[in-house]
Image (cartoon, rainbow, N blue to C red; front, side, top):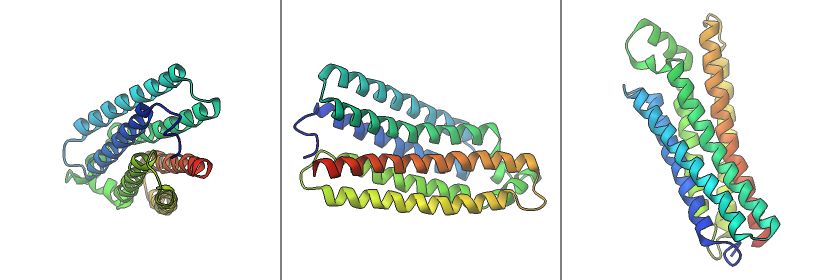
Length: 221
């Protein structure tokens, strides 16, 4: 089904490996928000995953040049792997800013940490969990993409990612509202705004992947 008869099987493996890295990175991001005292190490692990994903992206694009599928199929491969790459890029952007802004002090017991916690509330972790669910749905979709008679489940997964993106939008608005509540230090508000912007961008990127998948399903089902 779909591209099985027309694409190198290793391309499907690349999609699956890339999506699996996003799931792992999103899980680490949730841990990072929990601030268990290993922030810097978690950030390095996320960056390492992003570098591995970049390598998969470059190898995938190069492989399409060697195997030379039909131009429109090559374009679909590029759109899909690039959209997957955007997800991990945004996850890394969140983790690096979280560390740079020292927002992991939420649980350190200090007065400043208490202020950070009050401004953040539960929104960052909740957004991280939504993002994790979205990456898991995409990983399942990548596993099903080359299989026979899976178009209904693939479309269900696309709808689920869309639902999660809508949920993330609501959490984003709540987080921004809390960050800019009266009495909040403007610099702290801007830091959280940057975090929320990239978290929203990550869930938007997941939806972009789902849209590419949906287009493929409708073309080849």
